[in-house]
Structure formats: structure tokens, C-alpha cells
Length: 384
Image (cartoon, helix red, strand yellow):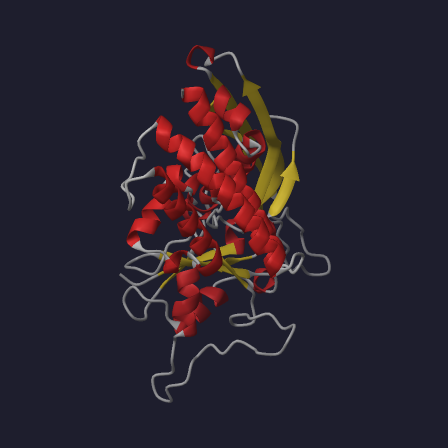
């Protein structure tokens, strides 16, 4: 009996699909209304016969008007025809029970949702320091630069005066070690086999993105212990402590910290601050006239700048606040060096977690970075 019921259900579903296809053809103008009505009439006859047999094999799962098989079959067919002709809004409550997409067993299976092969992802922000700093490559554990620590000196002398030795230049060594970071994810083998997406590729893209986030944070605030040195944590980087409004960026303070830079560095300098600080600077007004202090140019092709210098919005720079180091300005190509040792190494390991049916995806990267010319960078620390 179960096989007969299944066969009849399959036939009924097939008839529904055929009617839907014919209805779409009617809307597209491929068949006439007369042909459609004739087709529906013929299908209804067969549906009534199928419903009648099903009614004899089992009791319907819902109550319908009428006591006989004929009445139930007729009601079923009329409800379906009304749905096709006038839409779901024209159905009565009893008719809705007969055929709705809200119940999989009464039509929902015939109206599947559309699955889009695209993963919606929010934007991940990370430091743009790589775009302005100096980048170097190495195949060793670290990279070294000789550095002049003391300049030579000169002195005036008479025509036949005694010439004694002047101050000689002194040198030091700037050593930038590379540090390792990693990412590890476990994915079940069944998820890999059955997923509609290429999970391996997606995970690797996520790893690369998060490596950018992690290294960007270290370039700004890294401790230099097992990670790159951050600009804000280098004690030799000087600057200016604001004298304006407490915990706020002040226009005069921006000028003072800029002019704390030597002229040679200031010519190639870039501002670095948080996006919220861009807004704070845009909202600065003259206390007397009330106009905005910063008025970015509106000319096409002319980038906005502050006091003649370009700026970058960096999520890792602190926001405005009491004693916050909210503004960095400098010639970062001279002041900060990033050393890449290993771009990215990816390993797929099906063995370590085989007891749990998982595959391990791991990635590692080696990179170093530190301040090499502290005088080329200045920091504005806001007033407490």
C-alpha cells in the first residue's frame, strides 16, 4: 500500500509541475488561453482520479467539505485552479490548508528558495602603513642596516693654523628580526565534500586577510617582543603634547606637531589617524568667524589634504581621548621599515585530526618591522 501511495503522490506532483509550466507558457504568450484551459481540464480529470484512489488508501491529513471521495477530489482541483488563476490571496482558509508553500507537504516542496553562491562578508579594516613605509625582502632570520649615529664635524682655521682632529662620524647597526604569525582552522571532511563553496579557497582568503589585520596592528602598537615594533611604542619617537581643548584634536596642535618635524621629512610626510579623527578635524571651526578650519578642495582630481599633506585613515591609531596618541605624522619611508621573510605558507593536514573526521588548514607568515629613523616621525598626544 505504501508503494502505491508513493507512486500516486509522485504522479500528482508531476501533474502540478506540468500545470505550472503550462501556466508560465501562457504568461509568456507561447500558448493560448483556450489551449491552457483545455490542458488544465484534462489534468484535473486525472488529478481527481488520483485523489480518489488516495482517499481510499488513507484518510486525508486535513478536513475537507463533503463526505465523499468525489467531493474531496473536486474541492482539491478547484482550489488548485483558483491558486493558478487568481493567486494565493483569493483562497479561502480551507483552501489554503489544501495547498500552500508554508507547509512542505502541501506544496512547499514545489517552491524551493534560490540559493546564491556568494558569501556576504563585512569589510575588514587594517593598517595602511604598508602603502607608505619602506618594504624590504630577506631570506634570512633578520635584516641589518648600518646606521650613522653621530655626524662628522667641521671647524674654522687660520691659513697656517694648527688643524686638530674634528669629530668623526659614529655608526650603529639597525637589526630587524622577522617574527612568525599563524592561523589554524579545522573543517570536517563531510563539510568539504558536500559544501557548495570551495571551502579551502575561502579559508585561505580569510587567513590572508587576518594576517593583514594582525601585522597592521603590530606596525602601530607592537611590543617588539615576538612581534614587530609599533610606532607608538618606540620611546625615541618624539612629538608634541596638545595644549588645546582637553582630549580633542586642535588645529593649532596639528600645526605644532607638523613643524616639530625637520623640513626634509615634512616635505614627504603623511598624516596617520583614525577615521573618526578625520571627522573631528573636518568639524573644527574658527572661534570668531564660525567657518570650518579645514575646507577640502572640491576640484576633480585633487585629493584632500591637511596643511598641505595627504592623510591615511588607520583603524589601529587611537581615537580622540584623554592623553591619546591620536595623530602620527612623518616620512614613513625613511622612518619605518617592514621586512618580509615568508609571504605565506599554507598546509593542508588530513592526518592530525583524522580521529574526529576533520582536516586541519594552517597558514604561517614571517614579517618584521620597526622604527629605524625616529626623528622622521612625530606623534601628537592629546591634552589630558
